[in-house]
Amino acid sequence: MAAPLRPLTLEGPLPGSERRKQRGASPEPRWLGAAPALTLAIFLLPVLLGLAGTWGPAFGFLPALGGTRTSLQPWRELIQAPGLGKAVGLALFTGWTSTLLALFLAMGVLAAWGDSRAFAIAHRLIAPMLAVPHAALAIGLAFVIAPSGWLFRVAASLSGGDRPPDILLVNDPWGLALVLGLVLKETPFLMLMALAAMGQTRVRDSLRAARSMGYGPVTAWGKVVLPQLYPLIRLPVFAVLAYGLSVVDMALILGPTTPPTLAVLVFDWFNDPDLRMRFMAAAGAVLQLGLVVVSIAGAWAAERLIFRSTAHILANGRRGGGRAFGRAIAGLSTAALALALLSLAALGLWSVADRWRYPDPLPAAFTPDHWARSLPGLGHPTLVTVTAGLGATAAALLLALGCLEHEHRAGIRPGRGAAWLLYLPLLVPQIAFLFGLQVFLSLTRLDGTWAALIWSHLLFVLPYVFLALADPWRALDPRYARIAACLGATPGRIFLRVKLPLMLRPICFAAAIGFSVSAAQYLPTLFAGAGRLPTLTTETVGLSTGADRRVVGVYAFVQMGLPLLMFVAALAGPALAFRNRRGMHP
Image 1 (tube, one colour):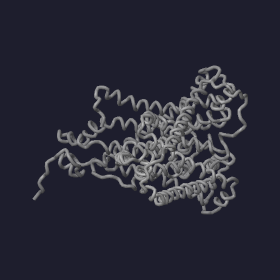
Image 2 (tube, one colour):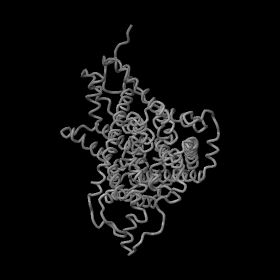
Image 3 (cartoon, helix red, strand yellow):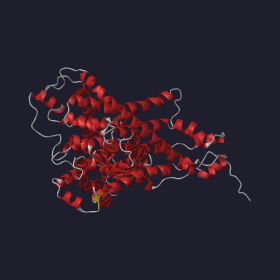
Image 4 (cartoon, helix red, strand yellow):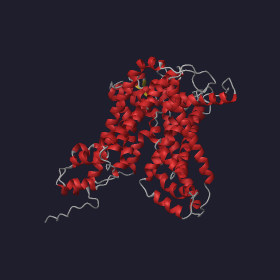
């Protein structure tokens, strides 16, 4: 005897299969059910192939270059390489210092300013700061803090100096300029991840309860919010640490040179005209991977130790303190924001500067000639940047929406393992698997093609697009879909006519983030594009080492402007589409 059907109501969740039966809808399409598997394949296959293609040459096996037997010779040559120890030390110092400072600043700003009107204004600047490519920010920062940069020009004009100071601030041997650039770039990312995580828990309710008991804002944050929040942003912190340990483009612009950081040193070996250097470079890439793995394990152990050793502080009941900390954070965050904005303004200023003698705080004359001379060379890199960005972003949106819709229809929710897989391309150093991936692309004759370029960008675009879409999609009120189902709409029609319009703002925002991530890719473009598909990022980094500041300013300004235009379109598109529907706020 068949079980009686329960009445369809608008309250409470229903399993995916039961929802489909009660709606009388057709089963889930096969392509939708295959979306998670396809997404995992796009993530895992290139990373695994790349690691395999790097580990082989690291142990002497690369038949294309005569390595037909495994050997430890690449490791012997690596150990004897001049400057290796200092390069490893620089990588550890810059990676760990920038990550800790960015985390401290992000959490401090949220603790001290989280409920203020000033933060509500500053919050709007987080997304545009994320849109700025790393290379563009690094070049702008170099224009500001160099001995002949903007800050020293202003100081000299006020004090009467006529010569730049004889100090090395950019490319300094300690990597302090690189640390500063990483902090300015990664702090907005961690703040955005923290704000998204706060929406997943009752952190705000806990904070209000602590404040009602007499705890100050900073003390309440440290004792109540941070222990709940940090486990939710652990993976983003690990991703920031992995990037700081293995960054190449910012290190080429701001980092030390004699020797450089480990990632830059390995990158130079890969580009050496002597092909035999590829074996030692592959061993260095494996060492870079080990450095990141050990650092992430150390960060996890340190987290456990800190939480255990501070448990008594969380429960001691002390409510005061934190005012001096709040003032210090306010000053630091204001200085960091001002420095970042000055760096971006410096790009535009140098791109139109005609004569700018030291110590004049501003150019004596402005001219559009640099733009006129640079426009012919900008055409092809801009076309490649836009095409690769739109292609990778469109593919990422399709895969992310397919996975999220499959979750909803199947009534499932991914666990922590899925989150680790999602972050895998961000946790594994790019230099550790992109060379191996290039080997396989060469064997299949795909290197230097549009498909290889878009695929390599998709590896890094998809995690950010999925992270930007997941929380808004999962928070969508299910009663909209139930009402549409009661009116006879099929699941496909509900997806197209109900969910997508309601999610237009998050989708546009995720697309803007995806495009900005694609526009900032340096190593994937070099390895997959094989030098035949230059983007604005590769051209800008190449020019930054010795070209005229005015030409570099033009390229960096265009590189920064394209993602910002995407964010403007992401804001204007939904506003224009819903100009007569102010209630379209899911």
